[in-house]
Image 1 (cartoon, rainbow, N blue to C red):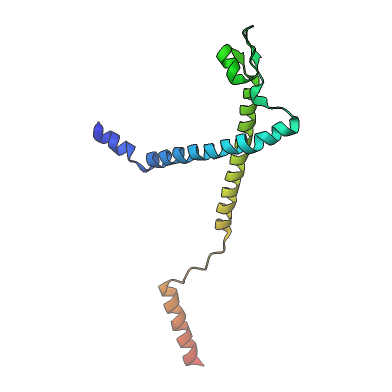
Image 2 (image 1 turned 60 degrees about the vertical axis):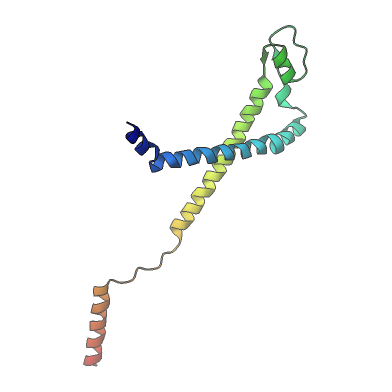
Length: 139
């Protein structure tokens, strides 16, 4: 069973998947930083709203003004956090769409590049030489 697991774990597909997950996590951090540090501040400035601290306290004793403090005081309905995550998802989906579209465009350009004509087969070359020699002798 150990040998069978070793064969499975070292298959190319499993290793490729592991590499893809690692690269995906790193790319996710980049996109998360892009969204949180660059795009969301602009959205907040345009609307004058910071979505992350909008919440409804489900306990009557919640007096906090930030979501982190409110969660310490009791249960909260963090609808602003949900809006932020939904906007993040839309931005991430759009960025991934652009990446896939770019990759597909590059792949299509490679397919459309003109290919050099293949060299004629040896027998075709030999027959062409014989034809040319026969033409020279008859002229």
